[in-house]
Length: 203
Image 1 (tube, rainbow, N blue to C red):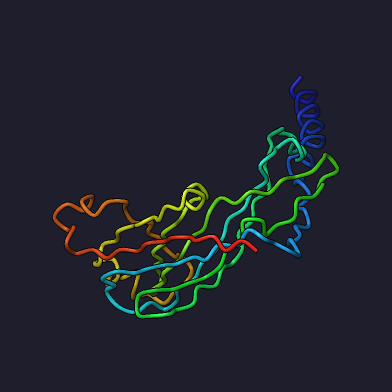
Image 2: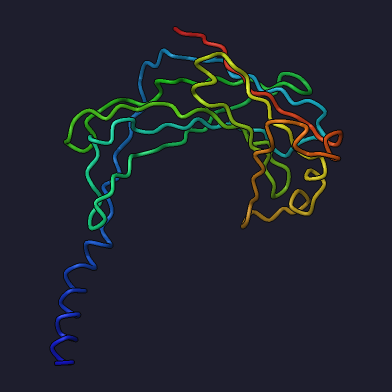
């Protein structure tokens, strides 16, 4: 009986393990050769505690309609493709950086043979890096569409922390800050802020 059970278990593993190990084919995501929905991005830093090693940006995208994506083997879940695209931020003054962002940067296409996959933007992120620490404000697509800016507050002490001093990149840390300065309580006066905004420049 034990030998039979062991044999059955071996056969079961033989049949199921390859399926578990399979991964969904990664699509060859194409850039839109003529994007038109362009926005000018402005990042404003107030009361900066000092210079940053780098100030960079990125834009996020994901497929909106999951029915164009095959189910993953074994689990049967739908994992919609997502992509982050670097977005250059150029310094124009001591506290202002500017960049550009296209909502329609990625090409809608039948990537899996199941129908047209429609890409939508999830918004943009900025990264103000010092040592092993990044301050990461973000602006959602809804805020972009409704012409709202997004302000985040950060504790200045973090800028002078051990993470900020470290030059190792094996365990980077990200702080997304708080939406309100008052969230820091007694430390509220010891903060700096970032504001992200977008203005349409449709072509």
